[in-house]
Amino acid sequence: MATLEAIKYKNGQLEILDQLLLPESCTFIPIRNVQDAWAAIREMKVRGAPAIAIVGCLSLAVELRKLAALETKKEIYRFVKEKLDYLVTSRPTAVNMQLAAEACIKLSTRLMEDVSVDVTEAKDATLKHLEATLANDVADNLAIGEHGATDIQKKVNKDKVRIMTHCNTGSLATAGYGTALGVIRSLHTANMLDQVYCTETRPYNQGSRLTAFELVYEKMPATLICDSMAAAAMKQFNIDAIIVGADRVAANGDTANKIGTYQLAVLAKCHNVLFYVAAPFSSIDFEIPSGQSIPIEERPHSEMTHTGSIRTAAAGINCWNPGFDVTPAEFITGGIVTEKGVFKPDQLASLKV
Image (cartoon, rainbow, N blue to C red; front, top):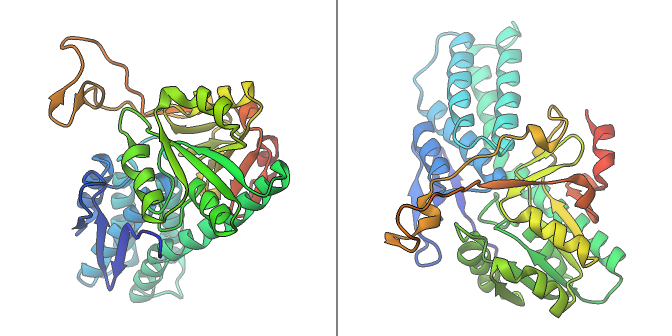
């Protein structure tokens, strides 16, 4: 069975799977412009650092295709920069959108300054760059899956492994296949997966709503656990490795990911369980020296106090609802899995281009 497709783009038409409606309904919604994309990202109709960048870039491609003929390359540059600067404000923690914006703005600047390139060529080159994000991400994810599965098999040295994962890092969070869940997919394809344990991922329940949905859809051997069961599960089921995604990796290897990741890393160290982070190379922010400098988004209190429209917490209680936490590099004992290979956190600095 093919993996889920959460982002559809063809001939300048963009649709995304509304993840707020999963698992009850698989409904695609149109993204007609950058404003639609910003709202979808902000409201978490699309989420996952790679997917955020892809939808952001493709929404700009949609607008650029509809745009009437521009008279100068400077107009293209201004249009591209204004739209991308706006998209970056949608979710502050994930670095992929920021890096994608910087790369496209850099390209637009180069095209503007190159006297041998005319207006039409500049527009076409920008569109080609934006539209390539979808296919590039799938290729990166396949490589991440291969590298991660090979490394886990080598270090665990078992015919079949038991894996724990947190939040959603599969086809719903990327262009397809996934990062951490892509590694799990590769293990499953190679008949090396005994069982995957996914956490519910409170308070937004991306694990129980989205990851569990993907695991059932693709018929992988899987078990859902509450977040508070992680330590007991590690001990009870002899978990071999934990693999999670990343919204931003600092230059020293400190990693920001969905809230609850840090506690899993601490528990993994106590139980002598390998802890991996899987993310595209674009999630590494070499400009940030450590996790202390990573901005952490705070989410609405209603995500904690309500289930749908029903209040489940005492009225008047104060809430703290960070969307992410930072796992120190020292706890990432398995390594950081990228499309370029698996690296120890202290090796990242030497990889800066």
